[in-house]
Amino acid sequence: MKQQRHTLGSEEIFIDFEKRKTEVNKDCYKNKLPIPKFLDYRFINNTSRTYLNDNFEFYILGANNKDFFKKFDLISNPQMPDNWSNGYSKGIAISKKDRCVIFWGVIW
Image (cartoon, rainbow, N blue to C red; front, side, top):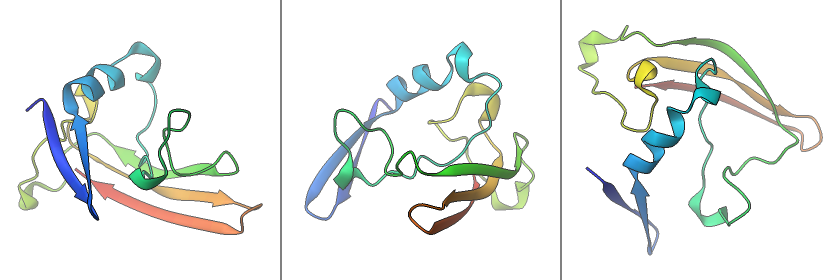
């Protein structure tokens, strides 16, 4: 699967999974923990990769790269690095300036 098409409202978005896989397997990401990208494709431009601004601080409450959820028959996420093909991440993103708190929990 090279690309996958998604529809957001009337807009079609194409995701190149092979390009993302190459990006996330770079050495600079080897010791990083996964967090959501918080993407909203309506706000992406050439200078921005995420929807959240620089005012946010991230706190990871837990993350593990094991498949603890075998009863759900999860498949590997093609957007994750090889060493994180299955797992979970949970945490909080806080912006005091924007008075915003985001809680996340993702399983793949």
